[in-house]
Image (cartoon, rainbow, N blue to C red; front, top):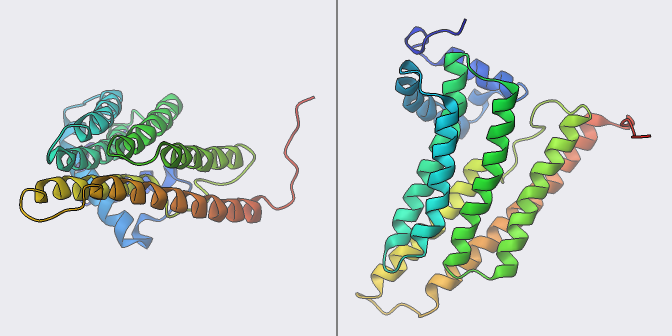
Length: 242
């Protein structure tokens, strides 16, 4: 039976369960991860106390992710609101797993559903940069590299790699930060047009730069994870279909 949320006031048990679900990664080893988890668990606690289904939070996060490009496409300073929605989507993404662990409702299917919605959310968030004017080829490339990174991780885990392998520079929080930062800057650039002289293509340049940064970080992360996976798996041969 799961420990009730109010029976874990320090959040230590929830952090231990998060670590177990992520292959033994110590959240306290990183101030960023530790702080993020503390915020997510604090927000998840009242939902867990009310027994909100984790699946409902997962679907809610996907819906918010879908709103990000729609709001970013609106004129004026609306990309600022899209940036805020991207952060909300990221929080919901962490809260569904936190609620599941707090209430003891985590399951193998829940993990599969969470991964699926995460990938859809990744593509929806990156599409916000496209509607802001980033080149199509850059958005497609960043999306493909992001999916390739997660495919590499899934394949390595399937043949014996423990946990996530490595926390790279292009994990979910990084993806949300890039989209939120670019969206906020694009919104500010539009608002500033009425006050100062802003280049007419400022929004497109910002969106394109953000997409290129995303592609670079994804490429670096693929190389990083591939190195870690190779070292972890060694020269052991994976079973082949006959």
